[in-house]
Image (cartoon, rainbow, N blue to C red; front, top):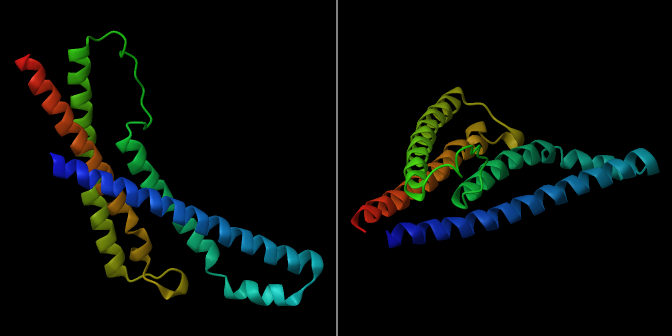
Amino acid sequence: MLILKRIDFILKKLEGYLIFFFLALMVSLTFLQVCLRGLYTHAHIHWANTLMGYFDWSEPFVRLLVLWLTFLGASLVTREDKHIKIDLCHHLLSPRLLLIRNLIISIVCSLVSGIMVKVSLEYIKMEIEFGGSMFLNLPSWLGQSIIPIGFALIHLRFLLDTIIKGRQLFYWKKQ
């Protein structure tokens, strides 16, 4: 159990650093593009247009980074149990029944995210077979690999939550 918590902590740190780096990169590239476009259209500086041509890959790259940020952020909020929830009966259940309900929800979410990992891996396999490319002639599956990675991280987080809640319920019966 301690090893799983340590892995979870390391993943949290790595995700946090990646989110910071990707967000800084997105803002920088977008700012550069806006400045160059403004210099060309409003100040009529022609070298800005030429330079913009060298950064034509940055717009699709920023869109791809949005996808990566979405999945990394979803994994982090799942870890912190801050994902979107609709909870109508939280105040009506006893603490033990609430724990049982939360355990069932964690199991279901773990199963669903596990299915999504499998489906997204099949999608990546199809992308590899198709052989499409994105900007800078990189294979498209490379950028889309965040989909199975993201669902795997979310699955891991729900799996850990299931184990923790299962242990709490098990030890609750012994008290």
